[in-house]
Image (cartoon, rainbow, N blue to C red):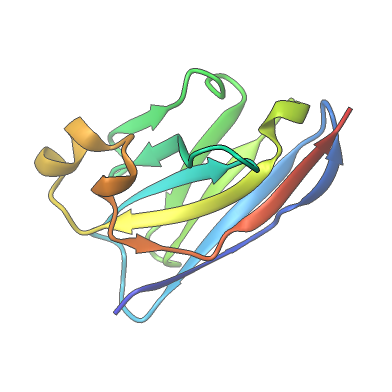
Amino acid sequence: QVQLVESGGGLVQAGGSLRLSCAASGRTVSNYAMGWFRQAPGKEREFVAAVSWGRTITYYADSVKGRFTISRDNAKNTAHLQMNSLKPEDTAVYYCAATRATTRAWAPTATLTDAYDVWGQGTQVTVSS
């Protein structure tokens, strides 16, 4: 069974950067698609970014496109989210997620929470103005 643990969150000023990490344990996730979602207080969990197991396909929410970059290191069983030019509206708990679904099955639904069956506990990101 796969467990995911996020790290790297914190408090940063607007315009700053943070790099979130997602460490997987229990088994390799080299054949899992990985995603990042976020949830702000009083709001639904929303898609941020996702990457296929082979790193050939990436998706980004329009709100983060050009500022955030998702990456993964299959040898280290980790995924990362580099967040630059942070804005106060990026404040949220950020969750790492994974799915063993094939790329063909995952791709059309990659932005949906239901596409993922393994979730981390989340890491808080707070951006001050």
